[in-house]
Length: 558
Image (cartoon, one colour):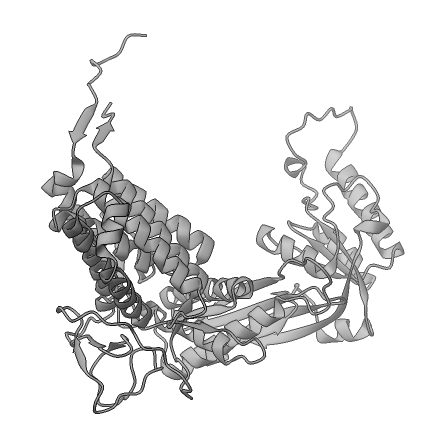
């Protein structure tokens, strides 16, 4: 078949970073991310031009997933940030701002892209060595014998998401719940390699945040007609469990994509119901106490099972299948025609009813160390609840990463200012040596180092949205915001004193080596994920170098 219209040639853009339109789009994306950064970040509302759902958020994942761009370079940066947050759950906005600032500073300083890439790669390697070293001044160990540092990390993540709309009391309560859920997800009596358990999240709209809670085991909707007396009649556990993943509705359309051959005089629906009742008889004979199904269970089968004292849970849903299997040890059965093998049965220790806000839920407690818990989150409206659910899920993941690398970084922008000061000081004394090793000029090396450090400081500056000055002290290199109520730096580790010299963060100041704090009783009140920030730092430099190296963009417009 011939083409209706003539094929158009591909559009080739030479030196895309010299295109003012592309640079304006990069600046716009950086501005969107910068203004959403930190506890006082401004909220973003996203909606399309034909109406529909309006999303209010301040998280990089929600922002970048829903903000479409036709610019390939911005698409690559957006994808890289989303991939980072999918793996590490934090520091997405940090990575986006740092990447875009590196690109902007390189262009503004007139640096050759190949030169900048060499120096940035060297500097990020120095950053990694410093952060992983024992002498790092912005790293604190996480003490798992106390919950304080875990709660501080969780609170820092919750507080950095203003769309959650929590006050200080609610933030403290939710932070404690996240740590509690995290601890529930760790197997107590594991030997050798073990996997994390599962935390199932249930949202209840229209209730106070203080009604939120964490329960061990799995909470599901109370089956119809189930009364407390029915659970009392079951006596004490453990109870045998069977689980089906196939529909037990008795509807022929649910049988699957098969060809049925129906003989004259045969009623297929009646025969299918008879098969379901035979299955029910077998389950009762096997002394099953809990009958669960991912999909629908026929009312007659339900009635038969309830009459024989079996608790029936239908419409469990795909999302709850894996935690249900993990909690009970049952194997999901995908056929109603075969008998249930012995190894397919599972066990639960106990049933009980729980009132959570306006909902009544059935709690299933594991008979073994299943490490499954349910977090019930309540909030005043749907928008706040969805943001809170996503933030809690990511905060728990960050705590899990802490088990692998039991450290945290100082928050509040103090890591960025301290790291920028350290890198600047380290490279000031070896400018000639490094310039010669990288085969670049002395001045180019100095400009690239300043571009890198300026990009780090700009991330710390992005935390301020109310017009206040951001300062850096010239002893410890921590970030400060003038506040009559606070006498510490942004992270809470350094106390202010009369002889502590400070200077505006966005102005030039002399090079110095940051002094490490020794014998201080202060504990940082804001902590960032070590693993997440370290990866974001490295990927941001890789992404910036990649974008700076792009010479042509070839786009097929057919």
